[in-house]
Image 1 (cartoon, rainbow, N blue to C red):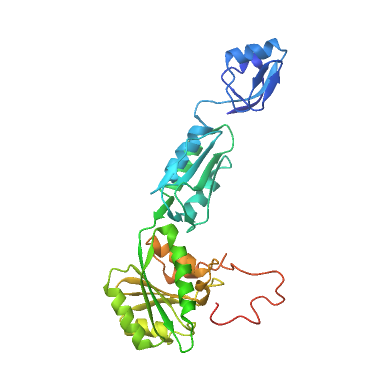
Image 2 (image 1 turned 30 degrees about the vertical axis):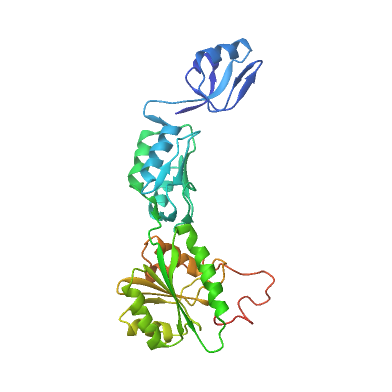
Length: 339
């Protein structure tokens, strides 16, 4: 692509780099210079104009942006018609955004002419929400550069895992003296969390905080149509031998992970029983404020696997709540049941 000042009579078919106004004639930046516009500018005394002229093998910015965006787009992603070298991508369904970070990084490293930006991976999104954008910086890129970009990005690097689970069973354990209103509020908060996914609480069981009683209830819910089981313990999980993990083991289940590098949310448990996911909720999950429980729950609602390695990778960005005025962060006054 040629770029720079050019005689007005030689600029026909080129792209105006800057907006130009001369008398009654106006050319907007990025528009094509027609023979008629060139003649009008000439009559107004304009002899030169800064223009971009595509050469053999060049691909225009809009076409290049569209091709990259369409290659990036996977399941449940809609590509917007390009404009000014930009093509936006939108969620075609509500769910969890899945991003192949390595592919995006490789694409952005191909050439400074090509850029792609996305929302964070695993972010919950709603249908119609903008999730990414491709911007071609100059007015055109060489075809070879575009082909390199398309090759490194592969296909479907950006897609939405639609919410698929609709039924959630809840088991709340209690200790003597615990108010039932605490559990009532917890169910209300959880129901609100489930609304964007179109899911509902279909079982609400309240039982003593006892390993054997909980194991029996876990087996009962594992046998019904509930897709996800959430356990809100009367006391925070302190060890793999504590009530909730011990009950999962006794019921023949498996504890995949205990603890997570997300604060609030450190004391979360992830497991399975007869193939169904089980979440041992941390105390902070009783609050509507974002915490590590949200990150795991949203993925499970979209049937995105949550492994120990996935949880380990949540540390960077996992500090979700802190206030500058606290003299000694996360020290003094924090209850073990809040983490």
